[in-house]
Image (cartoon, rainbow, N blue to C red; front, side, top):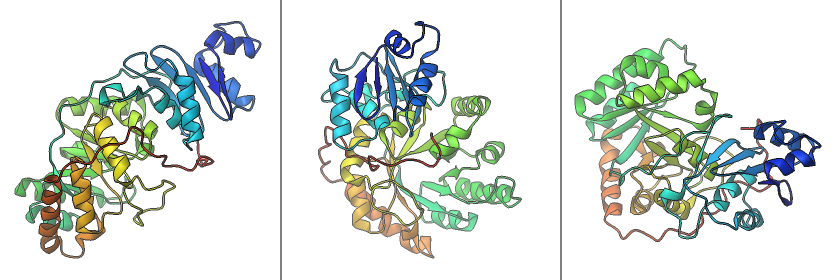
Length: 354
């Protein structure tokens, strides 16, 4: 096992305990990592089989893999750090073999309980243009224009009295026109009203209580589709561990829709996500031109998000976006890189540890 701060140190659990002056077995692995962090380690990764424990400024949890992985994982971790990856992402890359596929991607827990590794899903469907709007009226306009996937994203408090009628109206509109409504954030109201799909950010997923995650898992077993955002490798692993039905890769291009610390993924990372996610991938972020959407479609992404590009009249603008998507899907798929590029500055520190 290994504890890693600015330099890599190889330790198993017993050696970590000895280093701390403790009897082996006196503390759990997460407790050992906490003690090492308290001693000044910038990041700690304690490796085992099949679980690695991450305790870094960006992610904390069990990283569970399907098989032993590369024997030189410490060297691969060092190589990833040298290339500018933060420790949580480097720990993922260290466990991927050469010529990795979705069957090699680990899963990441949200707490001290490991999650069971899940096999990749079957081939991703073509879901077309993913329209994201902020009112039920715009949901209806998108559905009438032929969008198959429409997200209602209303950024208000969950107890705002406008939430329930907005979701109900949007649900009625999509049902009438054969589209699928995705409710962003307001998952409790969405479940109550029978919405077919929800989308959560990583922070939203982390904030759920275990009983709430169980509620969502039960709903998924009865047909609910769960989408989760991801911007980094550890977030992709966490989405896989959550058994998401779709995962968003973003921002593909720089976006002004919301402030975020992430570097643009680019088409190279998007194509890597498509190969490695093991679930349908949503391309999101900075898609402002039809040519960009076509490029995203060519990577094999299942769907691409259009937000600002819908303009004031989605009924008029959507047909051109849909044509761009179809054209892109007919292109030859670009080669996926062996490794993606980092999406955070190496010295980035989140406001609140994940």
